[in-house]
Length: 354
Image (cartoon, rainbow, N blue to C red; front, side, top):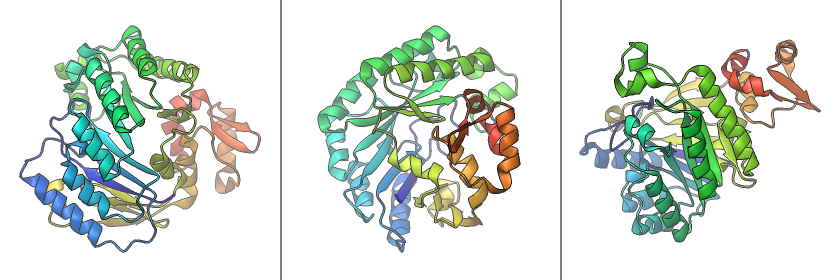
């Protein structure tokens, strides 16, 4: 199922935990960026007919509905099996939701991160749990019943009680899809840089320890499964039939084209990446191509899925035996997959296949 990814790196504010190539960029740059996206898409010689579209960012819900519709109209294959738009809660009105549907959007991914106000206030997010509840009702009324809710385990000040309260909201909202990410600490986010510098801004000294974050994640796995939302990928949970069609192609090595700043693509043979900065992209996307690693990628991408992968295991057979002996992989019939412990140590497992 081939697809298209479109990057829109503009945000109203930079969240403290964010390590993406996005942020608060000059407003004058936005129309230039839309024009550059249009040129890049129009210049494409389509090697396939896309079945999915994913608008990521950044905050692509900031795109004017007329511009969104115009960009989608440039892509062959409508109506798409899945057309996802990432959105920041707080600005979804009935008019906007209907315009998204008219443009072809049939799935929305909401960057909620937490339903607890004291946790949200430290991230830079402006919404509340009640706003999320109201806007999900707005989406449903417009016909968008397929949506995702992002949560982050490990936000400053998060406790077992507050984490369970966020999970209570998942049950209350009857979400079809949930993504749970464990907080990453690196210098590319304001919060991560503050932690590395032993500072205290952004709640850096109130981040739960690694054991607590792992416990939060495991709690989510158990509670979401009990709600009929089982884990199908390390960070993704869905009711049967609501798994992300677009994102699954990343883990199964299906082809997709990427448009926009820092957008990635894969044609089956090469990995393609556009220039990172939006300011540079509007001048020239400058795509860089690197050969794909079909053998290694099959393992370190495919093992992200809970169903695991089938033989042949080729040059990695001995490593797989060792990982099974170490309790990080398990054999289930004719497949191998991560164990619960292997999920928590997945980066160590994947490094064996790079």
